[in-house]
Length: 249
Image (tube, rainbow, N blue to C red):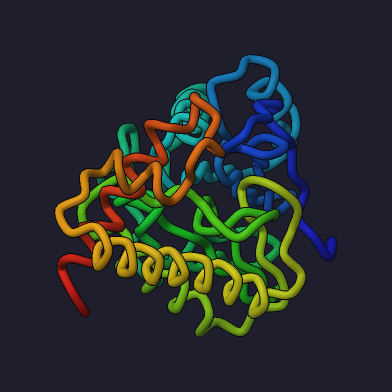
């Protein structure tokens, strides 16, 4: 057995995806394919070739965002198999909840519900390697992911980070960017960034009661935001404002 899983990059690099979506393959005979990414013909062809000698293939998606799920639906359909993932994600026919098992010949993968970045989001714990496939809970670089999809996502996100912290991990495999080889330090970094934003929002609301989302966005980011990121950043600011106004949970 290899020390680390194989992965194929979907080739969709960008500001939010870093080097692109990394599709992980765990196992050789009984294989789990995690996050097949966008519906890229070349990427799906490469994945199909990578599992053509396997006796069983389980296609798993961590959440429903367009850089993860379209390729998962396409791959599962082309292989004539179920799509495993969180209930509520379009195309999932085998819902995964806490402690459900995805079997491979390199060890079981244990589902862990980790909402926050998306309402319906899972990660996969690989105890045989003390590893965790994080989806978009964390990235391989930096200290933040987008958290702005739904009301309550900030509290959910912080709780999900704490759930992962409770695992005995030696490495985290995010769907974007390189592996995180110091899991505790990485989780601390992502928690601290989010708590820093909460403190920042608390101070701004004390100084600017009644401020709009646009005004708060300007106060936090100024002119630093590229235009293409403005809509996502505004939504993140709005849910952070709602989180602070709701008070301690």
